[in-house]
Image (tube, rainbow, N blue to C red; front, side, top):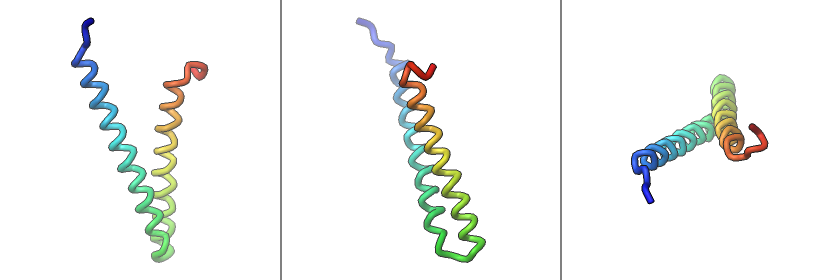
Length: 73
């Protein structure tokens, strides 16, 4: 049996990179929620930041589900 170690390494690298990116974006969303206790301008900015970050995370999860489930193709 022959394993393509280069392809396996590429898949692992992309998986780790995507995971780190989603965790960072989620953390930025939590940071946006933490800004809700400041002034009105900080409240608006924090809410917008949190909303965009959490929507980005949801989009990545939805795209992953789309790729996994064959009925969606």
